[in-house]
Image (cartoon, rainbow, N blue to C red):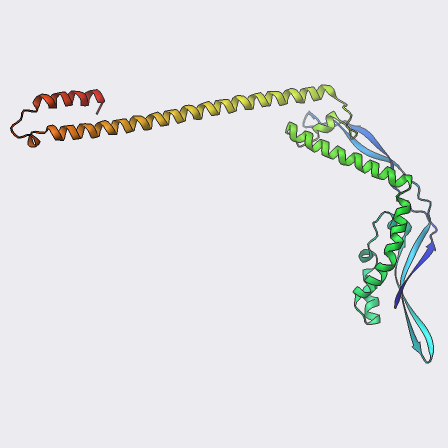
Length: 267
C-alpha cells in the first residue's frame, strides 16, 4: 500500500489571487445627528495566478490474484497548486471522507493512510511554498498584512490613551498612520487634558476630604480617650475623699475643689 501524487493540468486559472494594493477611502455618515465620518481601508485589484496545475492524491494497493499482480486505486482528493502554496490546504478538510471509506475498504486504520499521504504531500508543499514566497504576490500580501497589523496595534493603543472604543482614531488617521484631520485631533487632545485636570482635581478633593475626615476621627478618638481618663481620675479622687474613707477628717473643701474640676472638665 502506497500513496501516489499525480500532477495534472487545470483548464481554468485560479482567480483567488491576493490583493495588489491597499487603499484609503473616506466614509461620510451621520448617526443620531452625530458626525461619524471616518477613514477606512480597502484593497484594490488581484494578482493573476499563471500556474495552471493541481495534484491528484490517491492510495494504491498491489495484490496477487491467480498468479497475476493486480492493483486497487482509491482516489482521495485533488488539490490546486495555490491551495498548497498559500497553506490553506488541509488533508482532513479535503480528504477525510475518502480516507475513512478507503481505510474501511482496505481493512486498516485511517491514521495509516493519513501518515502515508502526509509523508508524500509535505515535501511537495514545502517546495511549492518556497517558490510562491519568491513571487511579487506573496511579498505584497505580507506587506499589506504588516501594515494592517500595525494599524490595529496603533488604533488600540490610541483608543486606550484617549479612552475611546469607537472609530475616533479613524476620524483622525488612515490605515498608514497618516494624520488626516489635525483639527479633530487637537480637539480630542484638549478633551483629554480637561479630563485629566478634572481627574486630578477630583482626586485632590478626595484626598483632602479623607485626610480631614481621618484627622477628625482621630481627634474625636483622642478627645474621647481624654474624657475617659478624666472620669477615671475624678472617680478615684472622689472615692479617696469620701467621708466614709476619711473618718474623723473634714474633706468638704477638697470635695468642693474636685467638683469645680469636674465642671471644668465637662464631666
